[in-house]
Image 1 (spheres, helix red, strand yellow):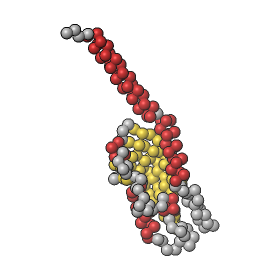
Image 2 (tube, rainbow, N blue to C red; image 1 turned 180 degrees about the vertical axis):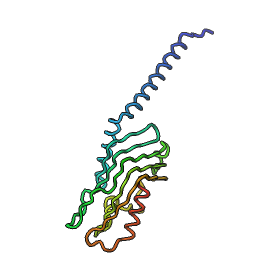
Image 3 (cartoon, rainbow, N blue to C red; image 1 turned 90 degrees about the vertical axis):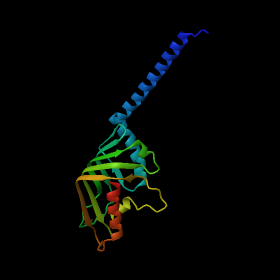
Image 4 (cartoon, one colour; image 1 turned 135 degrees about the vertical axis):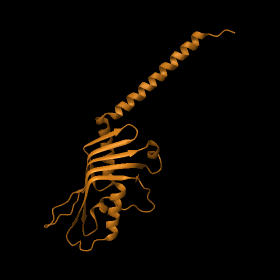
Length: 192
Protein backbone atom coordinates (compact mmCIF):
# COMPACT_ATOMS: atom_id res chain seq x y z
CA UNK A 1 0.00 0.00 0.00
CA UNK A 2 1.42 3.31 -1.11
CA UNK A 3 0.89 6.41 1.10
CA UNK A 4 1.58 9.73 -0.53
CA UNK A 5 3.18 11.75 2.24
CA UNK A 6 3.45 14.78 -0.02
CA UNK A 7 -0.35 15.17 -0.13
CA UNK A 8 -0.60 14.82 3.65
CA UNK A 9 2.14 17.43 4.09
CA UNK A 10 0.32 19.85 1.72
CA UNK A 11 -2.99 19.25 3.58
CA UNK A 12 -1.30 20.06 6.91
CA UNK A 13 0.26 23.18 5.42
CA UNK A 14 -3.09 24.35 3.97
CA UNK A 15 -4.90 23.63 7.27
CA UNK A 16 -2.26 25.50 9.27
CA UNK A 17 -2.46 28.46 6.86
CA UNK A 18 -6.27 28.60 7.12
CA UNK A 19 -6.12 28.34 10.92
CA UNK A 20 -3.52 31.12 11.16
CA UNK A 21 -5.58 33.29 8.80
CA UNK A 22 -8.68 32.81 10.96
CA UNK A 23 -6.73 33.66 14.12
CA UNK A 24 -5.34 36.82 12.49
CA UNK A 25 -8.86 37.78 11.33
CA UNK A 26 -10.29 37.28 14.85
CA UNK A 27 -7.44 39.29 16.37
CA UNK A 28 -8.03 42.08 13.83
CA UNK A 29 -11.75 42.22 14.64
CA UNK A 30 -11.02 42.36 18.39
CA UNK A 31 -8.45 45.10 17.77
CA UNK A 32 -10.88 47.15 15.67
CA UNK A 33 -13.55 46.91 18.38
CA UNK A 34 -11.01 48.16 20.93
CA UNK A 35 -10.45 51.40 19.04
CA UNK A 36 -12.15 54.22 20.99
CA UNK A 37 -13.44 55.82 17.81
CA UNK A 38 -15.25 52.61 16.77
CA UNK A 39 -16.66 52.03 20.26
CA UNK A 40 -17.95 55.60 20.58
CA UNK A 41 -19.56 55.46 17.12
CA UNK A 42 -21.33 52.18 17.98
CA UNK A 43 -22.62 53.46 21.31
CA UNK A 44 -23.76 56.78 19.86
CA UNK A 45 -25.88 54.90 17.32
CA UNK A 46 -27.35 52.87 20.17
CA UNK A 47 -28.06 56.04 22.18
CA UNK A 48 -29.98 57.53 19.26
CA UNK A 49 -32.36 54.55 19.49
CA UNK A 50 -32.61 54.79 23.28
CA UNK A 51 -33.25 58.55 23.17
CA UNK A 52 -36.19 57.88 20.83
CA UNK A 53 -37.73 55.48 23.38
CA UNK A 54 -37.38 57.52 26.57
CA UNK A 55 -38.33 61.18 26.95
CA UNK A 56 -34.93 62.03 28.44
CA UNK A 57 -31.60 62.63 26.73
CA UNK A 58 -28.61 60.39 27.43
CA UNK A 59 -25.11 61.51 26.52
CA UNK A 60 -21.55 60.62 27.50
CA UNK A 61 -18.01 61.82 26.97
CA UNK A 62 -16.17 58.59 26.23
CA UNK A 63 -17.06 54.90 26.03
CA UNK A 64 -14.55 52.07 26.37
CA UNK A 65 -15.22 48.36 26.17
CA UNK A 66 -12.43 46.38 27.73
CA UNK A 67 -12.13 42.86 26.39
CA UNK A 68 -14.82 40.47 27.52
CA UNK A 69 -15.98 41.95 30.85
CA UNK A 70 -15.91 45.73 31.45
CA UNK A 71 -17.66 48.82 30.09
CA UNK A 72 -16.39 52.27 31.12
CA UNK A 73 -18.45 55.41 30.51
CA UNK A 74 -17.10 58.86 31.33
CA UNK A 75 -19.11 62.05 31.75
CA UNK A 76 -22.50 60.30 31.70
CA UNK A 77 -25.42 62.72 31.61
CA UNK A 78 -29.14 61.99 31.61
CA UNK A 79 -31.06 65.20 31.19
CA UNK A 80 -34.69 66.28 31.18
CA UNK A 81 -35.66 67.88 27.86
CA UNK A 82 -38.71 69.52 29.44
CA UNK A 83 -37.76 70.67 32.99
CA UNK A 84 -40.24 72.52 35.15
CA UNK A 85 -39.68 76.28 34.97
CA UNK A 86 -41.23 78.72 37.45
CA UNK A 87 -40.43 82.25 38.59
CA UNK A 88 -39.02 80.97 41.88
CA UNK A 89 -37.18 77.91 40.58
CA UNK A 90 -34.23 77.60 38.24
CA UNK A 91 -34.84 74.64 35.92
CA UNK A 92 -33.01 71.46 36.86
CA UNK A 93 -32.51 69.78 33.52
CA UNK A 94 -29.79 67.41 34.82
CA UNK A 95 -31.45 64.30 36.22
CA UNK A 96 -28.42 62.02 36.56
CA UNK A 97 -24.76 62.87 36.07
CA UNK A 98 -21.62 60.85 36.78
CA UNK A 99 -17.96 61.42 36.02
CA UNK A 100 -17.23 57.69 35.64
CA UNK A 101 -19.45 54.61 35.43
CA UNK A 102 -17.74 51.22 35.34
CA UNK A 103 -19.87 48.15 34.58
CA UNK A 104 -18.62 44.57 34.93
CA UNK A 105 -20.39 41.73 33.13
CA UNK A 106 -19.83 38.27 31.69
CA UNK A 107 -20.59 37.26 28.13
CA UNK A 108 -22.83 34.47 29.41
CA UNK A 109 -24.91 36.85 31.54
CA UNK A 110 -25.39 39.25 28.61
CA UNK A 111 -26.75 36.43 26.46
CA UNK A 112 -29.38 35.46 29.06
CA UNK A 113 -33.04 36.50 28.73
CA UNK A 114 -32.52 39.48 31.04
CA UNK A 115 -28.92 40.73 30.75
CA UNK A 116 -27.21 41.00 34.14
CA UNK A 117 -24.44 43.42 35.03
CA UNK A 118 -22.60 41.85 37.96
CA UNK A 119 -20.95 44.89 39.42
CA UNK A 120 -21.14 48.59 38.81
CA UNK A 121 -19.12 51.49 40.18
CA UNK A 122 -20.42 55.07 39.94
CA UNK A 123 -17.84 57.74 40.77
CA UNK A 124 -18.63 61.41 41.36
CA UNK A 125 -22.32 61.03 40.58
CA UNK A 126 -25.40 63.06 41.31
CA UNK A 127 -29.16 62.56 41.00
CA UNK A 128 -31.48 65.56 41.03
CA UNK A 129 -35.00 64.60 42.10
CA UNK A 130 -37.52 67.33 41.33
CA UNK A 131 -40.91 66.95 42.99
CA UNK A 132 -43.34 68.42 40.48
CA UNK A 133 -47.11 68.78 40.66
CA UNK A 134 -47.51 65.62 38.54
CA UNK A 135 -44.88 63.53 40.34
CA UNK A 136 -41.09 63.20 40.24
CA UNK A 137 -38.94 64.04 37.22
CA UNK A 138 -37.17 60.68 37.16
CA UNK A 139 -40.47 58.76 37.01
CA UNK A 140 -41.52 60.88 34.05
CA UNK A 141 -38.31 60.06 32.17
CA UNK A 142 -38.11 56.40 33.25
CA UNK A 143 -41.71 55.32 33.86
CA UNK A 144 -42.41 52.37 36.10
CA UNK A 145 -42.66 49.27 33.89
CA UNK A 146 -45.98 47.47 33.68
CA UNK A 147 -46.07 43.94 35.19
CA UNK A 148 -46.37 42.32 31.75
CA UNK A 149 -43.37 44.23 30.36
CA UNK A 150 -40.04 42.45 30.19
CA UNK A 151 -37.24 43.82 32.34
CA UNK A 152 -34.50 45.18 30.09
CA UNK A 153 -31.50 44.95 32.39
CA UNK A 154 -30.62 43.69 35.86
CA UNK A 155 -27.89 44.82 38.26
CA UNK A 156 -26.59 42.71 41.12
CA UNK A 157 -24.15 45.06 42.91
CA UNK A 158 -23.70 48.82 42.57
CA UNK A 159 -21.01 50.72 44.46
CA UNK A 160 -20.91 54.50 44.70
CA UNK A 161 -18.07 56.83 45.46
CA UNK A 162 -18.80 60.52 46.13
CA UNK A 163 -22.45 60.19 45.11
CA UNK A 164 -25.09 62.81 45.93
CA UNK A 165 -28.88 62.92 45.78
CA UNK A 166 -30.44 66.39 45.66
CA UNK A 167 -34.18 66.94 46.11
CA UNK A 168 -36.16 69.97 44.99
CA UNK A 169 -39.81 70.84 45.47
CA UNK A 170 -41.40 72.95 42.75
CA UNK A 171 -44.57 75.00 42.76
CA UNK A 172 -47.62 73.46 44.38
CA UNK A 173 -46.03 70.08 44.99
CA UNK A 174 -46.99 70.24 48.67
CA UNK A 175 -47.73 66.58 49.22
CA UNK A 176 -44.92 64.32 48.15
CA UNK A 177 -46.20 61.10 46.60
CA UNK A 178 -44.47 58.42 48.67
CA UNK A 179 -45.12 55.75 46.01
CA UNK A 180 -43.42 57.90 43.36
CA UNK A 181 -40.55 58.62 45.77
CA UNK A 182 -40.10 54.89 46.44
CA UNK A 183 -40.14 54.19 42.70
CA UNK A 184 -37.49 56.90 42.18
CA UNK A 185 -35.33 55.43 44.97
CA UNK A 186 -35.82 51.93 43.56
CA UNK A 187 -34.79 53.21 40.14
CA UNK A 188 -31.67 54.85 41.57
CA UNK A 189 -30.71 51.67 43.42
CA UNK A 190 -31.51 49.18 40.64
CA UNK A 191 -30.75 51.10 37.47
CA UNK A 192 -27.63 53.06 38.38
